[in-house]
Length: 142
Image 1 (cartoon, helix red, strand yellow):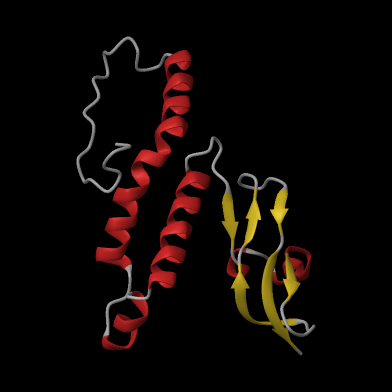
Image 2 (tube, rainbow, N blue to C red):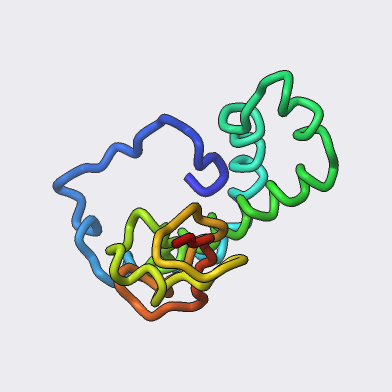
């Protein structure tokens, strides 16, 4: 799984396997996943560039820029490493937050206001419903 995280192949599990519910084995598996997560990054980057990166005449020239490619690859690496943590870190977007709490979780981008205009950057939580690592950024208007 770590070398080919984009594969559609499913691991077959034997429900009679005595190690299936061993908590110690599960803890070692989590350590192994975290320690080998960087091995998956090249496959994820390649998969994203081929399948998920927008391909149109407008974006074709932009996606060829080395700076855009490096930025995209680094974003993929960071989000993957955040995902393999136990528990996973969480990106929190404005549509996931009650409108009453937006200004508690997102700082103002260019101007203050009470109505969300658009998001600029998500907030980052240490884990789901956990403490905030960094506030997000959003543009508001009156």
